[in-house]
Image (tube, rainbow, N blue to C red; front, side):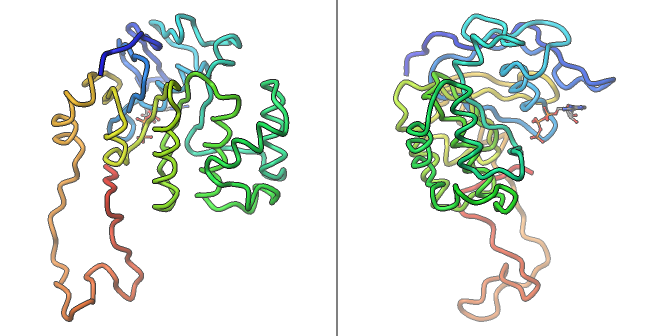
Length: 262
Ligand SMILES: Nc1ncnc2c1ncn2[C@@H]1O[C@H](COP(=O)(O)OP(=O)(O)OP(=O)(O)O)[C@@H](O)[C@H]1O
């Protein structure tokens, strides 16, 4: 893959909350395409996302999205969609009411709501009140919202969290099928995304640890984020078909193909 034009650029970006240095001098360039942002819990990924989407103002340094400062800047904000994690919605509206309101704020109508509702198949619960949604339904609604108006750039915070395998496959397919749309995706569940990712940024302890082409940093990413699990004292299954994880206490097997680093 050729490295495309830079769409997000941070220079010595800092964000503090009291005496917490959430970002401590991040300098990075994110090119066009699909970028995966990885890092340990509390490393600063979501803070970076909120600075890029103009929710937070930098304490020092600068961030540019499409060459402009996103803070308080509707010209830039109109050009991207975003799904935060955890998703947050007004509780007593229906999904459709909320999406319609949001679409209208971006200058779109009911047809656009119908179009995006198909992406993650939210139609079956769109007319129910959000207060009754499961966490997977909330996640799918927030992903749907991010795609309203076919933005040039979509930020997704943990798009694969809390959703079932079928929906996970669907989310990856939709992202992959979006042609020229750029994505910045934060995801602890990184392995299923690697085949479609162009660029990887690792943020840890408020700093950029690694930034590069996906194919070139794949090995480093595996070293950093492949969970090393050693089996403990639990007894091996005693009879065929009796899985060690399926205890009467309700333990579930780890989800195949995922590798949450928590
Ligand atoms: N609004 C806030 N007020 C105070 N501290 C905050 C705030 N937002 C983030 N922090 C702190 O900043 C640091 C970075 O948090 P951030 O949410 O950016 O990490 P993260 O990499 O997204 O973590 P995770 O993988 O757990 O989601 C943490 O120490 C966190 O407690």
